[in-house]
Length: 208
Length: 178
Image 1 (cartoon, rainbow over the protein chains, first blue to last red):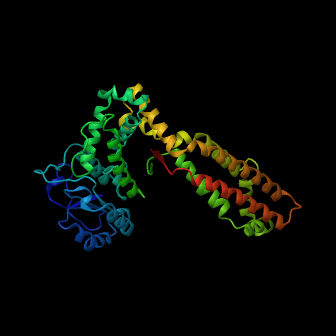
Image 2: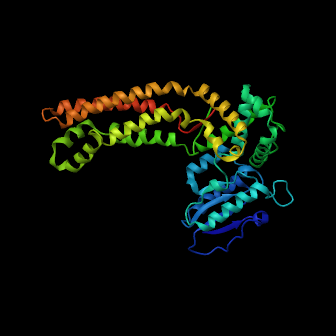
Image 3: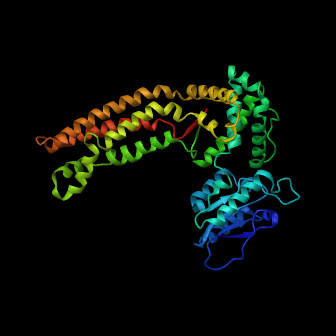
């Protein structure tokens, strides 16, 4: 499908937007100034066009600043054609500018969207369950268990430290601000379990 | 405890097939009066033949019972979060570290879910349904059994199917994160 953009240049490294043309199926990528007003006034109008296969909101804040409950309501109201990017994408001078994992996700997603004429698979952009956070949760849970396995795991920190660092980056990508714990060890494990558990519960709530 | 809906989980898929596609759609959702009519009315020959293929020994219902028993055997590992460690970021850890993570997490999962205690009741529900199915298929093929006996026998089958449905209902809908 075609990809139309009503957005500044923040995604130009991963997509070239098409010129709108009649009768073509398309994905619309939008960066509204006032998100609440846009979803109220414009979204239903845009989705009325049967050629519009999906509307993707992208802002400099995660989920375009919409709460999980609001997104769930919009998905119920408008179906799966609507999506707000879980990743914040700022302009090139902002810390949330497209880079690293978020750049890869957007690139893969737009390549997928170009190749399909159906509803886009939003999970390519925003995996339903963030795998690095899940992996870190399991590590922390095992460390927090206080059993003999925790000794083994703590003694091999160099082996799993990259997993922990990727999880911290994924957390930063999906949430505002850095992860509160810099280190994962037996002392911090319970706190990490609580922090990640809370985030994963929120993801689960959106999964229904 | 969190259920990771949306992550592929063959135990959850099997649970769904048994609970919905089989028990709900093919037994609980069928009116006993229609079952009686199916056996007697020539106009319902096609439906009758399809139904017989399901209820007679070696038919679909027997196969489903086998699958339910298999699920009872496999479910402890089937809903375990250890399978998350077999792929994704943890899969490349050295074997000793990976085994330690899986062992600790699996123990927490067993403790929080008590899933091992569900195997017995699930098997017992399968046994009772198997008995009811055998009795019903005997009544179905028996020439001397009248409409009342057939209806009662099917209602007994539904009673046992409901009990198994309830057991399956209590299983997780996906991989469990303790």
